[in-house]
Amino acid sequence: MSSGIIPLPIHVEPETRTQAGPTFHLGDCRDILSDYPNDYFDLIITSPPYADARKNTYGGIHPDDYVTWFLARTAVFQRVLKPNGTFILNIKEQAKNGERHTYVLDLILALRTQGWLWTEEFIWHKKNCHPGKWPNRFRDAWERCLQFNLNRKFNMYQDAVRIPMGDWSKERLKKLGKNDVRRFTSQVESGFGKNIQNWVGRDLAYPSNVLHMATECGNKNHSATFPKGLPKWFIKLFTQEGDYVLDPFVGSGTSCHVAHELNRHSVGIDTVEDYIKQAQHVYD
Ligand SMILES: C[S@@+](CC[C@H](N)C(=O)[O-])C[C@H]1O[C@@H](n2cnc3c(N)ncnc32)[C@H](O)[C@@H]1O
Image 1 (cartoon, rainbow, N blue to C red):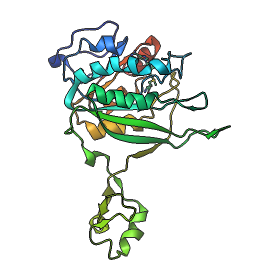
Image 2 (cartoon, helix red, strand yellow):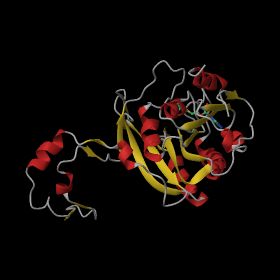
Image 3 (spheres, rainbow, N blue to C red):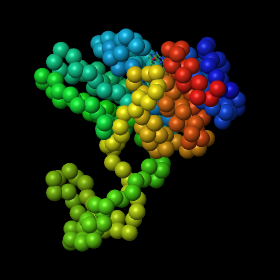
Image 4 (cartoon, protein in one colour):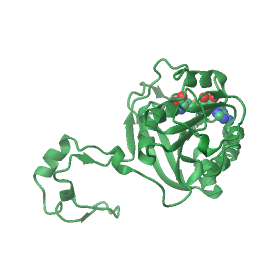
């Protein structure tokens, strides 16, 4: 498969995949993916249109219709995702009529009924969120990145996202108390235990499920782009070089651009021709 804009669904044979660059398709992801084989992708990472949010730019789905609309597409994602693959869904509910709409919560429950496991929820903390205040709430500075899997056993490369231990460890690990040198059960009765001593002498630690990243718009002609660091983190965590990444709502192409930089194959789909052109333009 060569890189380029492919306006109509095509039949895709695995052996025709190349490392030439991402493949971008113009169209509804449900239609385009109907021509992809089963068990093709290692990771699906995406930020779909949020219900009603950007009606004037790339359309929106009424919050009450959102779950039905989305499930028709996740049924296809389920088929094209490998059994040990992962689906990361970046989404955040709006406030409507003075309260948060429940369509994301409804969606999580519906996806479980559809057969997905809701494995984890990561929080993307938007570090550079602009100031603001509304009569009944403060500024929104985080979004959900929901992790779904088809099986309890899935590919996860945790060492690929380790982070420097940081200065706190120098002080904290210098003087170990008696509770630090044995597995010590949480005093808040969380059921978790820890042995701080295990971290002495280590330079790298595993991150938490809160990702602190600034939003980026750069000079992209799209109103809701991922910061590159976000797909990068998940692509490193859930895939290896040569694996296959899908962003079915690819917008300006960020996930595919990052996947390509990390030597992964990737496919991006969007219904807006300008976005697909922009995404592809990087490789022209
Ligand atoms: C939140 S944006 C994605 C932005 C992207 N993460 C980026 O970094 O640029 C959602 C995108 O989904 C596209 N879209 C909406 N409905 C779609 C559909 N049925 N199939 C494919 N793309 C769709 C919109 O045009 C929009 O560009």
